[in-house]
Image (cartoon, rainbow over all chains, first blue to last red):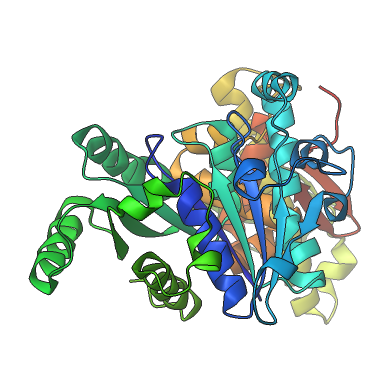
Length: 259
Length: 163
């Protein structure tokens, strides 16, 4: 049976979208059947990263009960080398749609949770997807918590910035723990992490601060900034160190070795 | 009325009945003053199927327990009929604010969609009677709906009602 992975963080700008796109692309490159979901309805961005202008239906429509999930998923498998399958379900980037999504009430959010939970049956069971990767909004808000509740595993993206550390620690204790979610921490934008000793020191410090398993350290790569979101490294730069790090993470998740 | 049986309420979930002298039963229905009626006939009590009788008593006691749970909750909150929060919805923020023991039960119903206390107990590794009490508590609070089908009671979150 497949897994649902939510990529979440306390603050914005920690690299959730970068991680989720590349994680999903890596799974597909490893031959898996994957669907990437843009659950960041307040600031949709996957349509731009994946260079998809229009969709027959948006994820918003699916959560509104207006269409089937099959109508939302766009097949991008041809972009990935090998036999893997890569689909994307995108959030509507229109201003009106964003406004509409932020005005939903509790009852709607409850139904949306039901619809997300039913993906387990429709996609993991019936269509035999290996991974559904949810890119979420930062912080504690409905769409993100719905994604976390639905997920089997939460990738928590964070940076070394102190504005992020405290909040992340609190969220681990007061959100993921309460829902009994398995988590893996990714420290992004790490400086000087090339030496083994530095990495070990970082790992020990992180375990001490957060008390949760580490999924990986991602160094600060100038090439990523320089690419200005035009490249999906896991797809376009298979030999880049960033791609290799993502590959290691994907393999650890796949082998259930995050602990 | 003769003291036919001792009812020992252990806690909210367990209650024992000790039949003193079944032969003295004169009425056809055994009456429990506080708990209500248990339809066990004299013939059943005196027949040669003690296991069947015990089984029936157990079933009835379980139903009474459920009713008592509801009564206790109603007393606690001073409401008579309607759920405590008529517009309550089982959304994630509500789940977050629940006490841990109820969250576990509510999450299981969220995942399963619809389940009996027994099915929930299988997932949470807690006793069926405990889950039954928690589920009924969630029904009283207005977060879950309960539907009887034959002998089984199914619990679910009502996501489809308008609102």
